[in-house]
Amino acid sequence: MPDVLSLLLEPLSYGFLLRGLVAATLIGVICAVIGTFVVLKGLAFIGDALAHIAFTGIVVAFLSGLAFYLGALVAAILAALGIGVVSRRSGISLDTSIGIFFSGIFALGIVLMSVGIKTYTVDLFSYLFGNVLGTQPGDLISIAGLGLLVLVTVLVLYKELLFTSFDPVAAEAAGLPSERLQMLLLVLLSVTVVVSVQAVGVVLVVAMLVTPSATAYLLTDRFGRMMAYGAGFGALAAVVGIYLSYYLNVPSGGAIVLVATTLFLLTAALSPKRGGWRRLIGSPAS
Amino acid sequence: MLDTHLTVAQKPAATLTTPAIAVHDLTTGYRKEPVLRDINLAVEPGALVGVIGPNGGGKSTLFKTILGLHKPWTGRVLINGDAEKPGRKIGYVPQTETVDWTFPVTVGDVVMMGRYPRLGFLRRPGQRDREAVAEALTQVKMLDHRDTQIGQLSGGQRQRVFIARALCQEPDILLLDEPVSGVDAVTQHQIFELLERLCVSGKTVIVASHDLHCVAQRFDHVLLLNGRVVGYGPPEHVLTQPLLNETFRSHLLLLQVDGRTFIVEDTGHARRP
Image (tube, rainbow over all chains, first blue to last red; front, side):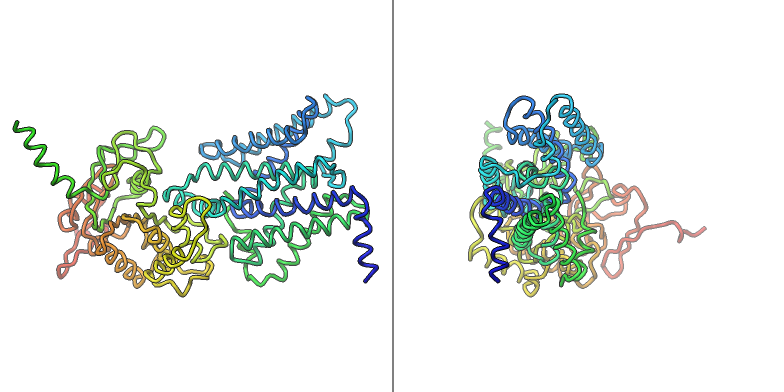
């Protein structure tokens, strides 16, 4: 036993690893809380788009000497509001218009990165693939602050967000500001994405949003429990992923996501909720 | 002098019979396409009204406008004489096809949602709300299924759960969109019994339905809607051959057997040479 304990405790003597562990755990929890809505409302593609757009925001912030988080946040929130507006005007399919704009804006980010930054540092690449072990004390404060904001908002508006996610028309008929609540959800999603980009990177953010919550969905029929179990799976994936990353010397973002995926597959294989897997796959995406 | 006298004399009478729903000169639609034109309608409190009309005839648009979810182009809607957005004064039961049945909520959770607007922000449901949920579920005979996930219910049970949610809101008016579509005859009967009881207790109930047969037998008022009000009144006055033809622009035959009204579609096959 002491061996296991020292295996667990030894890495924590390194400040960077401790910070990475705390950051990844926070992100795992926040992603799963918002991920509950993402899974149930089929927002995964929007989340993916927001992550890519946030990257361009980061590049622009880097070029103009602003804070990374500020650039990413502004870009992602503007995009989220834009998507919200587009989704209310039928005409072109939402998926198509998101696809066009997010690829376009992401491409702009990549071009700007190569043109504008002659001596580009590893920093920007780390946003593509994530580098949670590079979390600075200042980053940790941003993650904790923004994460707390997201969690408190969800907690305060829990029943309103639940009603409007489940049945937007009836919620609005009953007097809830359904449209504004759905916009708020997109803003919370963009904040979550921005916070997570550093840990798992643009490419893998969507996995953190979807996988732990989907795993939780297989285990419960209650919304609140799905959120809580999802947060547990997200945190577990983060902690196990970080240790694996440390001992096997593999990228932390990839390790965290692989642990989350493994948890999902195990749960799907052993799930007591019969047909849960099929229901999840068949659940409407809009 | 005479004018003043008339106004004064009419006023008390008008307030005595303030309609539960009054629609004045309503025209509205989507984009530039009008769906409803010059709708005028006054629904008395306690009425059980069946709304029938073809698909695209504006039933859902009328409901959404009454609920304040869709804006009139011209005209207005008054709920209990009040032009404000009705909010929780109207309980709305959506078409079951529009609901995501895989959502991880139980029967009790869904019915509790009817209490949310009453609670307001930040307040969590309390003892009184749980009692209201139990009461509403008892009314629709679904209390035993309180902890069942909604996807596991039959069509009729799903309808009753959503009626319970609307009841839980303690509204004066209930709007139900196709509550008996895809529901077996026994459940249909139970749902209508419940709606009749609600009307007796003073609630105004408006039901959009495809089931002409049911409307003819169960409702005390019928609204024929096809872009405009083709007819409104007691079934025996409104469900006439000419008005039905005008509503559906096809041939529906009205049959009277033993004092009961049946409506059948005249497909033309039975026509004799």
